Image: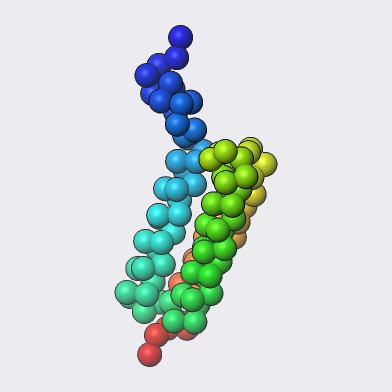
Length: 101
């Protein structure tokens, strides 16, 4: 017998991995905002990172649309790799010597 939470998750197509994707996206947005706020990200760096985030989000929406609201395991792994790349880029851009003027 499934727990109430597992039943809910199964009924509404929610699982921990997809929750992690959403949480990670929110965390990265906060990191970007802090970089803009403290001047460690230039407008150009911010725009580049935001475009990449937007591309990932668009891909997620399209993949979910094609799969009845869910991501396949292969798609989840791909999103994770893409988010890893963006995360590294955020770190590198925040810690380079370029700052807002």
